Image (cartoon, rainbow, N blue to C red; front, top):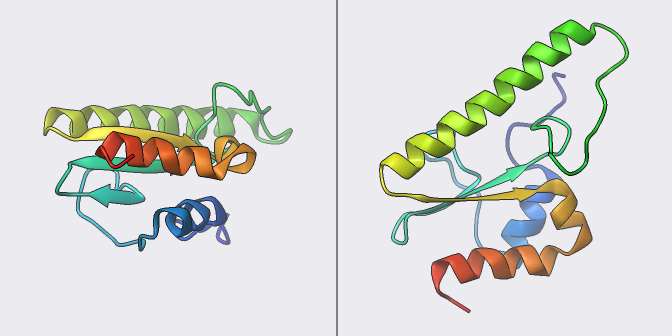
Length: 119
């Protein structure tokens, strides 16, 4: 797991390139991958495996399944809490899933731009 990157993953870089943005660190709850502070829009690019995409329905690793169940449950709960915390301070939260970016990256970029009122 050491080689799993926290930031700068291929899906993130794909979306950033289409939005003509830079990945920057921020102090917002959950550290969104992309943040538009003026419009108060936070964008998370979630990997289907690590964040347990409800559509992809990926299985658990075959070994140490109890560990993975707990880990994934914590990830999902943390994502929920971060989203609630951002919404409580007035931010809109968009979640873009890895499979959505693979299927149609331009559509994902349009979705972000639409939430900013820039379409």
